[in-house]
Image 1 (spheres, rainbow over the protein chains, first blue to last red):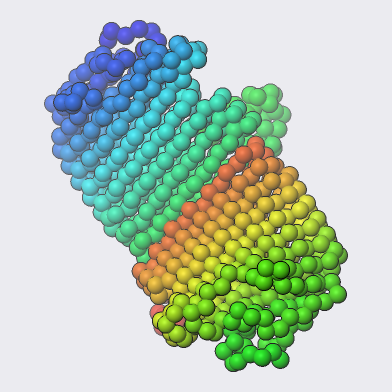
Image 2 (image 1 turned 30 degrees about the vertical axis):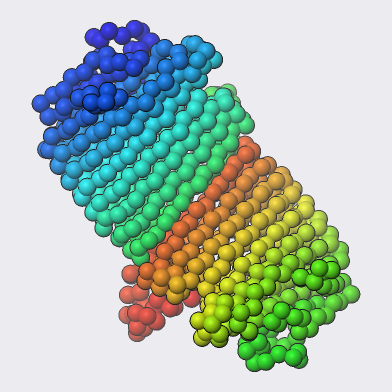
Length: 308
Length: 308
């Protein structure tokens, strides 16, 4: 196994479900340095010349392979900005697992800002998983600002799973995508904030090609004094279809602002949006309480189901 | 009847359904001057001291009465800004009909900007109808910028019908409302743009009181090269419920941007939004064509039903 301590290993499990060195290509970044890197015949991972990130090249027709590039930070006071560029060859079909875990036991803020750019070739299919997690008892904040840019060529597809369940004090998430003919983008975001956390989530999806489609569903829970803003714009510039949905639960003194935008610039663009913000329905809690759960347990169970 | 020409009378019919002098209180403004004004025992209409609009005072407990304050403009090149303030007494129950029609046969733009403020007393019920209409073959634009502010005291209700179906080249509509305990606001907007028209419609509804509710539904059609922006914010600052819906049909090269926002600042605020933008479903048109209608007639009928 890699040269990592127990906290780092725990973070790796949280953000990338990794219990050992992953199969296939990977790069594990720990406290600003590479703790291990492996390329395969079809997937090449190289540091950028500027030293501030990775270039990942996936050969055309690569099938059923994966790339893991998790990041863990356990020192207080680190602030880093990295750029990872993915070049996905035509008709490749791969899974990419990113994600960042920060454990901060110190008094200084720790911040990881990762800019991921995806250049997805014709007919390629990508499954992308990005989990963010924070832990540690220090007063220093755990800050994660992911920027994601997706450029999809004709007939490509991408499924993105973006998860931030716990422990991230401040996040400003920006996701932009441009879709060519028949490209298909599916995004599932799950977000929970607590304490005094802030989470901003910004999406800008441009449906440029005929037959392109996007389906963006965000589920979020704002607890305690936390604040969330969900800002998603779908723009239809061709015969295309787009759907966004924002379902949010507020608890305690949590507040949520949802600002979805639909822009139809083509008569054959069909765009739909739904949003709902509210607290857990009282009768749902009562139902579970009659089964023997306390009120807090009932709430927990409902939220776990909602964010599943 | 009033001293009005045939065009002015036609405009009056379009914007206020008036075929003769209205019953009850009224003020008819034609080309920047009052063409007739009547107060009643319970409803007093007076010019503001500054001369740029009206003050309308409705006595408490006034029931089943109405106020008409339509505006018609038939001269090219007029630009006016008027302020009308409505003070509605407790438990009054009245209908207010506003609206503006512009006939512009000249080459200069004609513009009416009307700022309406409503101070609605406890338990009062208001039905408000505002229709905007343009006609005339001149190259000068017909511009209408209505600003509406609504301040609702406890247990009051207001139903607003905002209609702009035809002939308005440029409009920038701003509607703001603040609701106290148990106040209830219902807004129905119907909008159609054609040619090179622009329509911006901005709503800001603040649900401040416990038990307050707002229901805002906008239906719109953008034809030819027209552009529409629908921007509606519902803010829940108490135990309240809010719903906004934007259904839009695009035709030809029409474009629509819908930016609804929900802001929940209270755990007991329940806010819901829906939006859908698209063209008329092909099977709806085919169905009507099998009944003997041409494609254009089928479209017309579907749109008329949609905007009804």
